[in-house]
Image 1: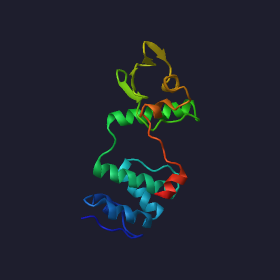
Image 2: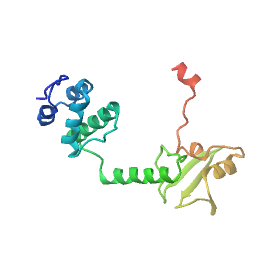
Image 3: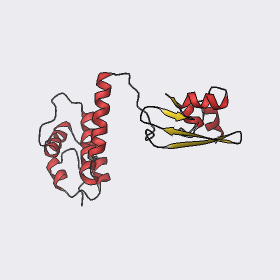
Length: 170
């Protein structure tokens, strides 16, 4: 069973206790002094903590590591995705991250508009509609409706986010 820590507890006792219940151990971390956190860091990472790291950041990293050991970390694909994002942000700090997954090439998007079904084929770098290539879905949505539309919204790829007034009514 996981032992609760006091300010004077030895971090080694915490580390060697079975991690059957992570939550009590995590809630006891803030009570540790910086020296005990450094000891725990040394055991978790097999190296010393950076000398100028703040206690708050150290707590977060140690808590993450304990959860990672108990429940498992990221798989290789997720690590690769995070590494790619890091490289992208190094190259362009103002880059944005899409919260929706990309549409895979070969996907067919269907949309009924005014009693007519419209079919769009997703290709690697464009969209095909009625034999013509388009760079984005909004161009196709405008062609179909005659007005400006968000293409991803029109084809149901993006769900419309309720505005604050609509959320207040819920």
